[in-house]
Image (cartoon, rainbow, N blue to C red; front, side, top):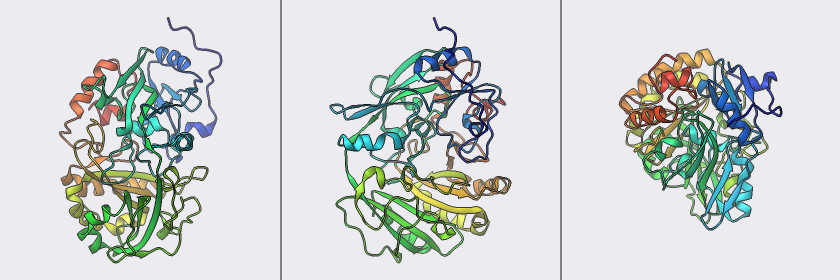
Length: 434
């Protein structure tokens, strides 16, 4: 029987913790609690009528809010990180950030296949929202997850694995927090490797469109940075596993004469970026754009991200360039990446290779929210999907998304009373008013 909540639990009502990372959202939860152990988390979940888990608070929308309910801050959850060399896997806790564990993996001779642009985010929150890195052969980060421990609505712990539960596992990882609390995750590893980054300036847009496939094939991970209004893509960053042959020029783009922040064209210093210039370094210090221990990205910003079928890339680029002046008024930078298809029901890459269109906005939310409907109207013909944790106007999944009915059925089984829902998920996933 689950007893009363331990006196070690605290209500964290410091004002800073009532907001998300960017400060654009003030949570409406009645309580924010910080369990130290999985058992304490179980007690809290069992007694609360409404619960949402909090990770690094890097979502820009209300996906993790719990109006008048409980938010479970997992940052202090004491779950050991264990590496299984024989299985080439690592098991870690729901509050662990990528930056907390990557060096430990490297020192043990292992690596994750890919990382997001910043290592400051939690593993659980990243995979739950479909976060990704880049690379035409690399699916989203959730594809590395082989098993999860899920804290369900009744306060019980259930373990699911890719091999043991193939019928439901595709719905359990990218779950937008709608199924429970991820208390442990097991991820696939591979042998540690080194990476070099090479930046190129001023890629003509026509070349970017005509040679898009060749540019994406030029790196293990490739990022293109633009504001959509100029005649050139401001910069292209190739990240390659060492050894690698790197081109001297790139379809008219020339090697950068120094390090580049993704928003270099907006005048942002490269101080917090990982080392470029072709200098090899460990995978964890090259695959992200931003360094552990430094402020990630720009800081005072908003974000949106859309995903379109890779085959539609050229048409999508032209559609957005048609409103490039509007976008450039508000965008610090936009990043174009690719990701490979996966089989995860709510993933942006579900059964479709995708081009990811990320937007880092100036912190002018009313103006950004006024622009998003126009952008989404331009993208609607292309079966567009949106990031679960970023600003969006319409629903994140395209009409008729084939994974959605299966996910709703799974949610009905695991959380029949909707303990882990909130108004955002009621609207985005379940077609109810919340």
